[in-house]
Length: 279
Image 1 (tube, rainbow, N blue to C red):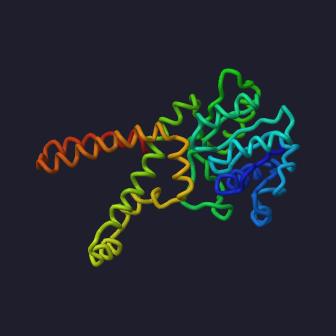
Image 2 (image 1 turned 90 degrees about the vertical axis):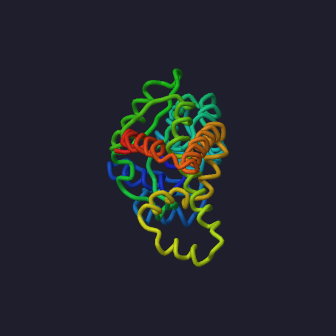
Image 3 (image 1 turned 180 degrees about the vertical axis):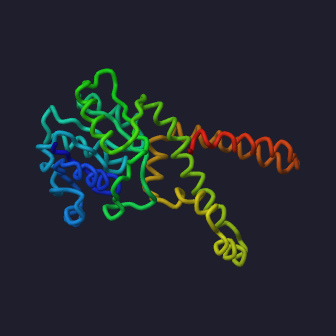
């Protein structure tokens, strides 16, 4: 197939690697000519351009731009596509995107691969990024079954595990396991930086090891992505943050009261629950 990728960053570049290796002809579009040339040189795409007209012959197009650009870029893109073209996106928020696009394009299917790293850009792209990872699709009752089948086959070829759900369900779920952790992790780093004794701060930085590395990783990621998560999934994220604050207040109270038994019970509960989220 001819497959178009609009946005040649980590996700778009990684899609290009895997789909091209399967024999698809990959057409890439980026805002920067230098990124286009780099994507060709790295072997992520067969052709690349800053002009969306390159995607006119694509049978399927993946929109891999930052969340805030998905809808504006889509509105420019459709001027170049035939009505039969299947369009999907990879944004980490689904409801506002699906609401804005679905009535404009019959063959649109919202998507979100749950994969990535703290790095960004075409240089961060890697092969097999989606292997064994969840990949959410959010078609609605009016989405043509043929379009769903084509996209499902492409996603399965990446080695990803497909999950279907409503856009609103997706946004509530990812607010818990993706967007909330970014804010909590960022707050952890900010709290550490509030240490006023510079010698203690330096010592903490020197002693930080795997535990701090794991819990701070997503908070040290792309700031633009974090802001867009909050902006476009505001309601669900606020709900998650408020519930997190409630749990944090509960821990503070238990420690203030020196209620070690209740604290142990709480930690036993979280220990037992974690495997349900992380294998």
